[in-house]
Length: 250
Image 1 (cartoon, rainbow, N blue to C red):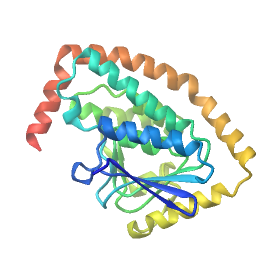
Image 2: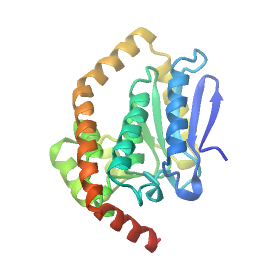
Image 3: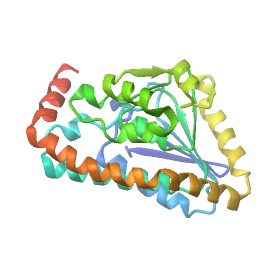
Image 4: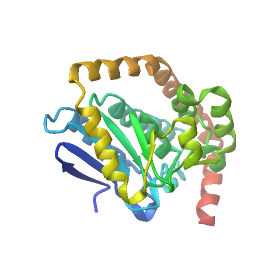
């Protein structure tokens, strides 16, 4: 089974994160395949837009697979952050529309993937959270990604508590633009993607480029800081202890 599934529907490429038994949690193979897909489709003239979602009806993406992190040392922690940066950059640099169809839980790195989409459509099953602090990890990348939309007060609360936002709150704070039934989510996301793809390409691309440039300095800086901080954190052994404890409870 491949970790991502692609389907081209009249020029709209639907990418499904495909590890449903793990709530579509990211591992390195999935991360690499997803990065390659965004880079490839950015150059593919037959691709007008991407819809990103998760396989099944439980999760969009539950974050980084904890079994990947449980035996990290400081060097592997740095490598992990570097891999995330290349993945996130491939999505940020995609110059066509990218719609997130949030079919369930989007947590941690999965929340980040949702935030990296241009627009998001949700359903009553949609949940988003920045729960790293609850598994012993410093919460670094998520606060940077959600701050431009949510502001300091909300970002601080979510980073400190790790709590989930449900669909009503997500709609209220602007993290999802539309709400529909879960079984209609992909159709509505494709419609949204088609609507954006009909915009004049030069105008859309330069607008998207400018929006990306606004946050690029802080985006680069937080990854530089994250390498150092995660290396220090994993050097203590505390994140590994908490992650292993969490895995034993599941």
